[in-house]
Image (cartoon, rainbow, N blue to C red; front, top):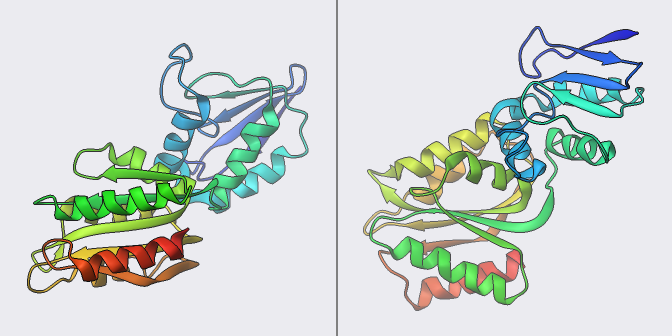
Length: 249
């Protein structure tokens, strides 16, 4: 016996999932899909997280609605359009989708995303990472000019705290940082603690621009400390990084 669950905007307007009661199989369209092939050996959650945030992430409200419908079903296998069929611990897959679609952090940790021109902003980001790691924090560091942007975005949704570190560029942001923040906002980034590191030789503006770009995001807690670098780290900016470490840890 087949039954049908409407799932508009997950992630197309016309999506309808199908449940086969005989095999307890949910044909879930794009939901629960991931990048890659069934035999590539990649952990499901890493590529599924990147797939979800990149493709479905904007539609958390709609995903929550269809998860409520699925809660009434006895599911033994999930068959998405993309990636492998899911068997075994179905509750784990559903739980992760619930976390992602409600925009809650997946784990406690800090993601530091930076753009650097001459290496000084990179030095600040690496210094912050080292100090946080010494405190026992879970820390990820992404050079946005050299990293896969979709991976950095997915990891920002995974972690509970985000540090944005950018040089000032034409009174704004280095382009890759601007693209990164736009990608976060487009996907409903919220419920996170955010800290800023700005660099600029004569008129640092990156911090103001980054904060302004995130103003429309919900439930953002800003750290009291914003690190300001004038070209390169000095005693004053190192002291600010130390204060930021105390806040984030």
